[in-house]
Length: 192
Image 1 (cartoon, one colour):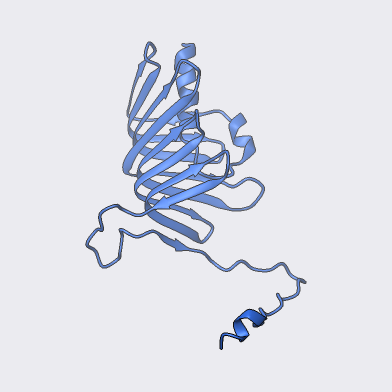
Image 2: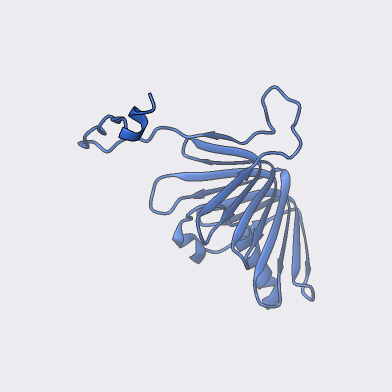
């Protein structure tokens, strides 16, 4: 029974989204609902299938299939599959949510990396990034986004990385930034 509980914990950890999550979420109970579950205590693998919903605090993962495993050193790994698999979580310390979706979401607890494969999308507030692959290293806060290797023939350009970054509002009372002033350097003036 302890191993099954560890696998449930692994499911929550494997669902970690590429965000600065609510710190209190880690202390909340993990709830997983699905149509079916198969657990192999010997191999330390659990598979949840059919309308899978994992919640822990503000974090919610929805998928068609969630496979979680734990290695002999206690590191957790997870794969969520869906059309698409989605997650949503509140950011720590701000009133913002992170939403993500991909056909496959993987978590590697040993190297603390979250990867979104195929039709990957992550949004924060009104900012959005899309690509065929999004990787997030939770230790270094580094994102990597890649387009599809082979261009997809579509007018929307789905094979390209797309990012929408909204202008950020300045706090009230702050002065406007000084206009950018370009000065010619002496070396370039002689070349004219």
